[in-house]
Image (cartoon, rainbow, N blue to C red; front, side):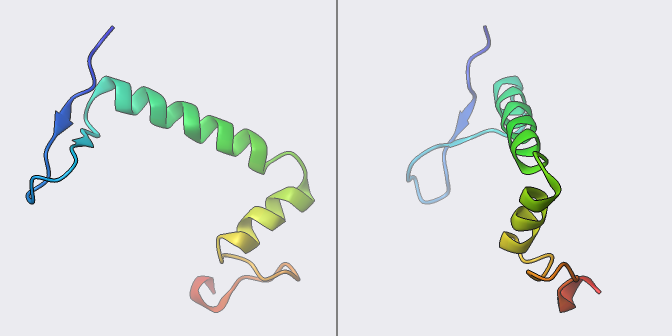
Length: 67
């Protein structure tokens, strides 16, 4: 098992994960797959996610930023 690679911030505050590490990539892929599975359960749920993210309006049209 690989260790999580930590790097410190410039201010010396809390360390953050290194996005190049294998564990970070694996965790990200797992989270992305879970989000996709949840967001595409039904067309209604997918629209709700897109509305929440500001991509579509509640009526199903693209918002001004995406036209």
